[in-house]
Length: 138
Image 1 (cartoon, rainbow, N blue to C red):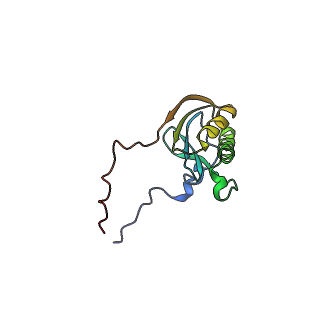
Image 2: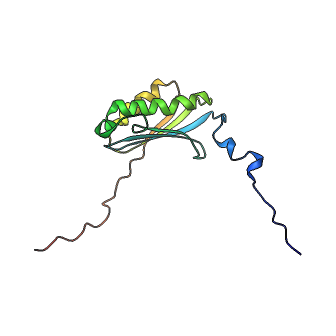
Image 3: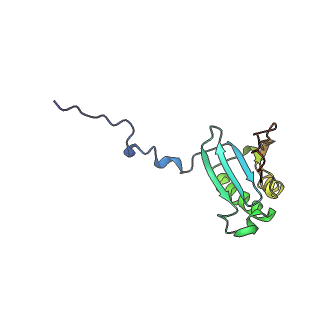
């Protein structure tokens, strides 16, 4: 009287390994996060699944050099190179953050040959934000 357990998604059907292989992606979204210390470039498909990513740190830049425009340019070029091989032609660009790498990353994306449908700044801005902590009394 033992009950058999049905396995719904097993690893044998190849769904898990198919995530990283060359899925054809004609259109995607390029997210650039440019902080003062680092620049992270993430490329997703339309549904938001990450296809490729790179940062100034993974490109070999250490310390304060990660925040430079050249590091951002290198990170953007590295992330885009793998995606062009998968067939991406069009992309939307979302830029976030106040860093120096914003313009350099956008310049590298334009130079890569991908057609940009739009470029949007999605930096979060507080509408007078949180209440500050109360002043210290001595």
